[in-house]
Image (cartoon, rainbow, N blue to C red):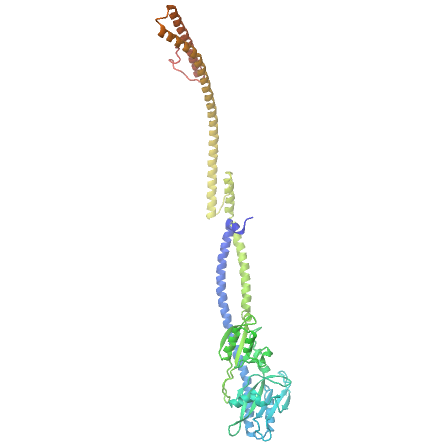
Length: 511
């Protein structure tokens, strides 16, 4: 059974079809590669633009919420400074702040130990009970403590007291029954001598920021995140990461180095994007620092937060990949159809060559009368078929002449063979005749020779009678020889006459 390479090398139409398909495939692959390269580049640029818009919109929305909390706290703050000597009024301020701003879920006004005489610690804390983003009205609860730990050991108190400036805390895990993660805006309370004597802290629920950030869903499987400058998550779809867990903690859990590199860039306040590997999949992380807007009366200072948008590679290039599969499928099917079409066309165009090949094979086997069909084609194949037809006709004519000449030569050879056989037979007869005549002449010749020798050698000693006897003997043997010679001459004349040869008058005289 012939193998595929042999079939290809033996079939011209198949070889031409494959060559055409290969060339078209090469050009198509180059064109597709260039097109998809620039398409991927455009999609990546579009993703970057979308990510930038998402980051800007998310940051603006968060900043609006933060600004609202800061302004509400500021409004209470300036009135509070006028009544620092009225501790019971601090509960009213806390309640009013919570009631006046729907974003605030709790407000704590605390003072340093022994600020009020007879009270080691003072805390006026009002919070919403059973806070929900969808609930319009929630019950307010007044508490004298925040957690079991004294507030003097908690970050929302120690941080502003140490800085003596307004600040936002890192995400805090509330230890009450609801367990609502919080970030707090903290204002240090200054007395008339400009000494920090306490803190006003307004609590903002992480769930509210999460709703803002996560609502800006960049793609089907992508998400947004908010990162603090210490690497802790402020917002993340996985709520388990909000419990004092920093992004660098994942380094100990086998996180990919590219992911840690992107986190370090976010924490350091860089802007850009990184290609990272998360759980074995490629993600694009677009990030930029969270910058608060400059508003009159707003405390300056950077929060150190960073907003990030994560796109799975599949989401960015999903349509691209689908289009790639569609085009590759169409290209393969198209090339197959093109191959079949080219194969069909070339086979039909080269069919006369196939017929000529079979005709040449039959002529090579001796069928010189093989008929070559006429054609109306004027191209190279038509010219080849026409010339091949002329060659076959000329060859058939020459073969016919050679056959006729061969027949004539056979007839002449037969005549020559018969003549040769006759000549051979005549030569044999002549040789036999001569041999016979020679045998007949040999005895009288020998006797004649003896008589002559006797006369020549003993003529003095011979008597007259003996000499006469030898002379008679010589005459008698000579007569015998003459008769034999005459017989030979008569036989030659008869043969000449039988052959129809006319002899001259002088020939054939007797001896």
